[in-house]
Amino acid sequence: MKPQGLFRCCVTALLLLTSATAVAQTAHIERADVQAITDASARDVAALIAQPGFATAVTGALAARPDGVPLARVMARFDPQARTQASRTLAAQDRQLRQKKGLPAAGAALLQLRAYIPSGTRLTDVSAAQLWVAVLPRGDDRHWTTLNAYDPQGRRHTLDARTAPAFPVLIVDVDTRTAVEEGMAVVNAGLQARGLQSPDRIRLAANGSASLDLTRLDRIRLADDQEPWALGGAEVFAVVSGLQIGAAEPEMATLTLPYLDHDNTDYTPGQPLVIWGNYRFDAANVQLFEDDGDTNYQDLLVALTDGVKAALGAFAPEYAVIADIAGAILKAMPTTWFANDTDYLDSFYLLQRGQAYTDRMGAANNAKVTLTPVTLTE
Image (cartoon, rainbow, N blue to C red; front, side, top):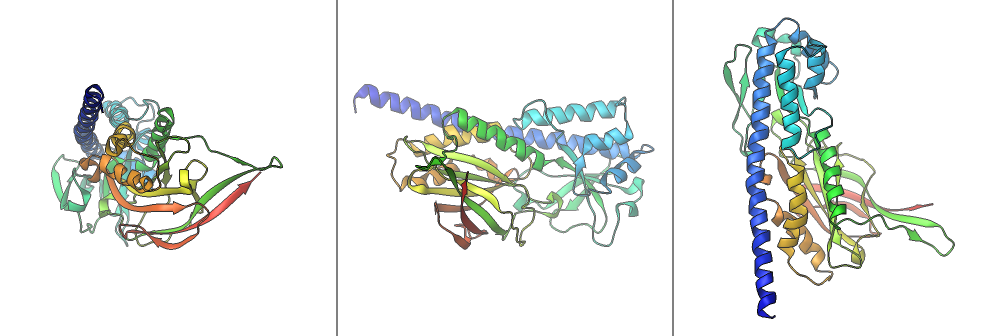
């Protein structure tokens, strides 16, 4: 290589490394900001409980959906005209939350209120004066030992993160189901714009008919979804990756698995998992991640574009590179993302087009799937 070429390669590598370091630092800052917003909102909700009518608004909103309702909906019951300072403050915190998560300013409310209700009890078993509002802590949820809860008098209490309380508790956190749906749309649009996700290639037959090959996810079971009691159901998404056809570039797509709430449970979604036609050698990887609420999707997009390219470096489009792309995805993710915002669950390497898989275990021995090849015809 000529000296000028070597110099350019070194500069490029340094810029990519600097970019990856900046993403890791930004992810740490954003995560702290998200937790600060939810903590402030939990304090605000706890203070509101002492006001006449608010506890009734809470129990009414959560009666049908104890697993979570938008905090804005609770406030609408309590303060229909949004005249109070509390309504304005919580609405502003919701807007800040969208910004910290790298989502468009306009969109659904993300702050939500959930109720943890032990078996055999009801939310109304606790008087308003004794109702606590908990908030999720920072850091790796697998290492949580305690979490904070606030009472209507503003006092802080400590709850065990692993042993669920014997009484109902309210929890203020992020509506990760809504956030993941929006976030995956942001990531896919960014991958397409950067040339790392191709339009679906339809196969055309000589008679003019069209067909599309899929691999369908018919059954999935997680051995461990990494969730303490306070987190509720997991929100899982998948990254499908491989080699592009006609270019020495990765091909990547993301999708949500919104039904996959709990571990040790069989789910039978019949969901399209891999859409073939865009993957060289008819092979692709599928990796599963779980989002606990703090992910910034713009940072995720940078990791899947700049980070993956930096991890891969220059490569020839050979079959062996397909598995390397999956490894590059894990390498590109900042270490902080494997904390309480994005947990790595499992990987399925080199899935083949047209191949059926029954009870296939992932590389981490955490997820088990049954996959079926399907051809859709016009």
